[in-house]
Image 1: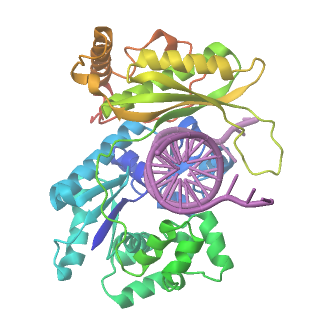
Image 2: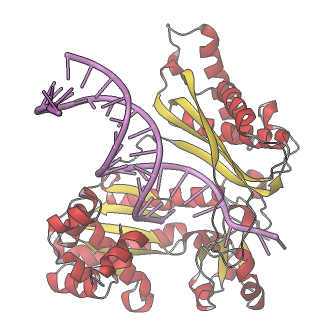
Image 3: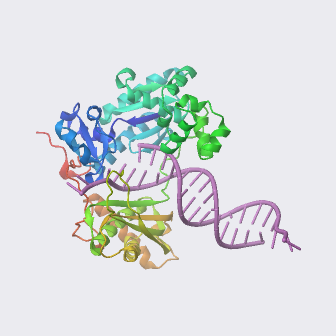
Length: 427
DNA sequence: TCTGGGGTCCTAGGACCC
DNA sequence: TCTGGGGTCCTAGGACCC
């Protein structure tokens, strides 16, 4: 059996931990640049605030109902996430927990006796809330896909389910599947949903009755096959390994306001490159290729749904894999020179590192020049200082200090748990 | 005026090899 | 006129996730 533990409106919950007066008030959290709404409390949902909807369209509702609004505070969410996951590891055993995303984890429940599934699921929910202040929902079922179905049901009616749903009999499973529209199944996105509905398959129960070969043929090969198997109670997606190294690392941002000049774009790209390189070093990797891109602002056609403009990018294969920020910035700057066009307005830029391999120079490598080993040490020192002092206290000059491209963050809360000078004050 | 960011997996098809 | 069979590796693109 698998359990999936999913935090309720995670970013909102994290904000509320340090703002108890908001516990039963409507709250929303905005994406970077205060562009979209990416988390809403139940109270905010009631007022019709749409998920992933643009903030400027919801502004009226937000102001009218006095909904508490926050810019995203990833320092806080990252730390709260760690607390939740650590709680799960402590009570269920490290080897049984797979962290799936910032607010979600799968748990292998094979060690739990069948008749105790309900009690243990409830205990997970209560312990996480007691230890971290974050409310979670727990869904338990024989496969991962089914546990997500269970979790949806737990979330939909929190009163009735107490945020816990266990699907442990064929009857319960079939009933749950019948109540689940096919588009809500984990792994069925918009395209697949459209196709399924065109076949006359409307709910998850109908989908689960389809032949495996049919699923393989119509829904992306093994992807569809696994999906149907999981719905048929046959586990086909195991517990993944934790802490797998990333195969690609990206740092991309919208600008706070459109940017025109080359110097600002270079500053931004150099800054993103530094951030990406930090992520790279955190997993002791080295990148063999770097891509940089810019997105020009496109004239808007009204009555058109929002679309991103074309991405203009270029890639450089590095002479040898590296995790040294200065090397990466040099390459990135070369790319920016190539892709930048005078006179255009840009609204976004980004950097991607790929061809990531294990960094062998960490310990010093006999076969590469001494200078490079020294650079690696320099990087470690920078990372340590930046980590212990504050972000970017040490940075490369290329990152600049004008920063007129910086993203909007009008409503960011203090980083209560990761900065001494932003601790919660009790009077 | 104003619409996020960062990932994964899989498949098809091309280039290349013997 | 006629042109095999079997592989590998890489990339682009499509789908999905939160």
